Length: 240
Image (tube, rainbow, N blue to C red; front, side):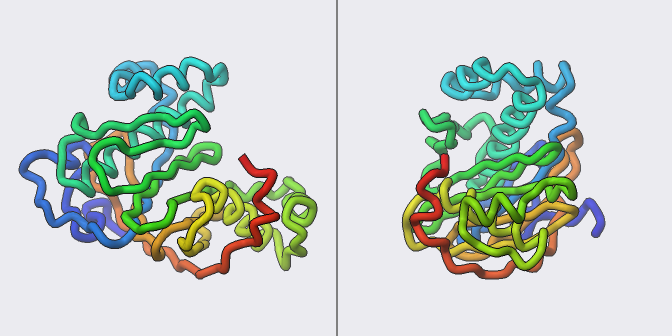
């Protein structure tokens, strides 16, 4: 799919997402999921350019992280969330205000009305926005061939996975539900490029791939989402 393809109804490059000339007809009903490569956030020049975007609570959290890889993931995710929120609300990126809550989850202070969630796995970060009544949660898991994920899922969730992919999808679902909290939001799962994805939201999301390095528009991703019933609450009790 060509890079000039935009996220449906957004028609906005990442760098100009939410500029005053941007149409106000951005999608405001379906949840939106953006994915991006973390690589630019490991470069000193990119870090210097974007660290100032973070709020005081986000910067405080960033300072507490010692590992360079994890710092890059946090910075990339919070920058990606700002681009997504700006595109959704039709505002400039600097008008987006995000706060890190005590448990690390993001809170979208402005624009109002959207429920955010962030996830990371190795070189990928994901940002989700939903306007539904329930909580929102996203998780992505790189499906490592050497990880004993079937055993982990059996121990933590009491579920006998049918395959390695199934096990990763269950684990991603568990993490997304923990982030979303209790509520009526449904769960949708999919796979893409070696990743297991799970979204807890009002309906299945529209997805797009974003390049944090360039000014190219977000590229629509056509994912095959499958609905899953929520896991029993007891299986989430020891989550974070």
